[in-house]
Structure formats: C-alpha cells, structure tokens
Image 1 (cartoon, rainbow, N blue to C red):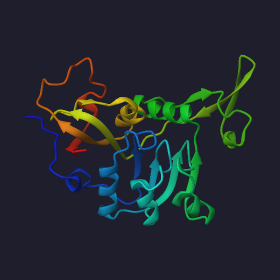
Image 2: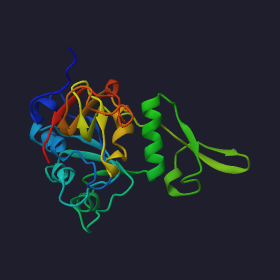
Image 3: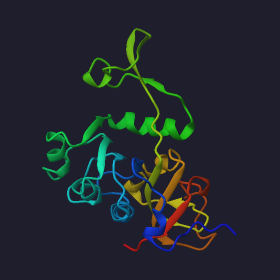
Length: 222
C-alpha cells in the first residue's frame, strides 16, 4: 500500500544534510511551506542554498534560517523584503551571504528545465546587462540571447491545500506559483498540506502535482 504521509515535521525533513540546495515554493508568503522550513531550522543543518521567489517575506521562516547563520547562498528574484528592511540585506551588506539574482520568468523556466531534464535554454531576458556576465550568449535572428542553465535542487519544500496518501496535490490560488514546478526539480520532494483527504476525494481535473513527483507529505493545520 502506497502511503507517503508522515506523522510529523521532524520526520518529513529527516535526512536533509549540510550544504543542501533547498527549493522553497511560493510567492512571498503565499504558498510558502513555513512549517517545513522551520523544521529544517530545528534540524540544525547549515551551509544551505535557498532557491525561492523572494529571499524573505519579512519575519518568516527563511529569515529565521538566515538569522541563525544557516544559509550560505540565496538564488531569488526579489532579494528585498516586501515590508522593507530584512535580515537578508544586513547579511548581504556584511558579506555573510551570497546572492544570485535571477529574473522571475527566468527562475521559473530554469526550474521547469530542471524538472524536465532540459540542458539549458536561450532567453533575451538579461541580455546586455550585468546579469549576463560570464554566460554564453548567441545572436538569434539578429537579437542577443543568453544561455541559462537548469536549476536542480537536492530537496523541494512545497505547500499545497490538499493531498492524498499517494501524494497527489491541489493548490489554493497563488500557492501554485513555483510549488508545482519545484516538485519535479529535486530528487526529494516534501509537501506540507493543509489537509490529507481519502483516496478518490480529489477531483483528477484539479490535481496539479501528480503523486509521482511527491515523496513525503505531512498535514499541517492552518
């Protein structure tokens, strides 16, 4: 019998190691797997690379990881907080954390490429800017394009509204940003869900992330 549900956050994040690349889903606070990220904090691992849309959303779980000195590098589209000054800015200015700035569409496509096994893609985004420094460029139909490589993490931490014991997931509105594509871009996908429902309760037409992409899920009540 396939049953991917685990009993606790601690069990869900078990096995994440120092130096891991963590894909953290969501957009700002929408769809961010706060409980899982705090579980990583309690696990005590360090030297982490965080791949996320936002470096932090203020006083959130990723900020707590940074405050504890556990994060070595952030790859994101929005390094500044939604509510002004953040711990990330303090650490970055002090030279205590690395940043790879990735335009939002490019971030999504690099993750999709990682999930699909695509070796890279050319995009006009960032051509002729500092973000293209050191990257291969090519002139295509008279315009400059930049080669972007796929992003593949060690672990994807994602959040969904509902799931079943097989790992099929449905999302709520903005939580669909980054979470589904990240599920396929890491060999270990851990899902935080608001409710685990019996098999057959999820409308197949509403399932966004099929069970094949999910390794563990844990129920976290809102």
